[in-house]
Length: 325
Image (cartoon, rainbow, N blue to C red; front, side, top):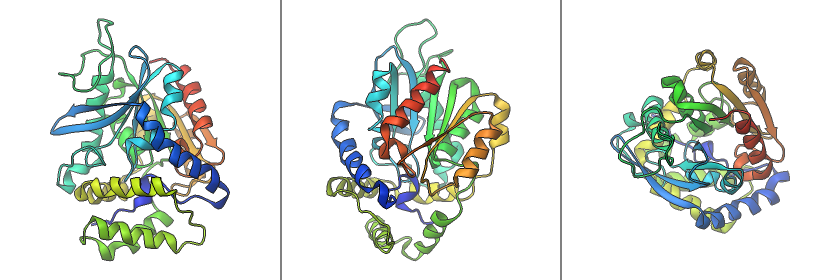
């Protein structure tokens, strides 16, 4: 069983050149959430918590966070997406932060998580009769609804890809942000392996071990106190079974890029210039194989939506405007 790593889905360790910018964006993201809508979406077996922003008749956008991530990871870009006319929804995946857990690691496969994404996308799609768009707590997804712009960050990119492969017609486009063609490898995988001795000792023990591991890195930049407190709260609130199940999926997912390319879905691969999860050449090659765009966000690492939100939002808006829903 693979032990999860707090920073795989949403890295809070940034290169020293990014420290000042990241600190400002980390605290700002928490303050911004109070201005965003909050709702819950029913999915088979439970419900998912979400943040929302944008006009009810805007083209729907669905954002899926990474491993140990949460909907708040997208908070810095939601106002800009709303201002551009998009109806943006960021979710906690099952077992993450404010979404209830399923309690079984086997319930956290890519296929199971992708089914949740498809269920939310059905609720977000505009009804076939042209009425107002769907939303949380709906009775069911509209048949023949408009396709949704889908974005997945890190492990969320693997989940989003799984949803797109399961039903390409549900989506107008796919953005893979700081994600890769298959299983995670390299330094972040090594960190997970080195934390295995504390597996099974409880969430608080795992979190403390990860903090201690981070602090041994000479380039570690601790988040501001407000964000540090939030990160601990959301980690401890998450389902332990989800951490183990998603960790297993993250380290075993095959390369399905060629399958995705055959769907013809328009794709954007976007990453931070200092991303330390999947190598940038691998992400660029994935974009090439998808015949998609490749955008590198400056002054950002693994979480460009949080670390440098303005150019991230601009790149997304430009891509989505060129790909009508």
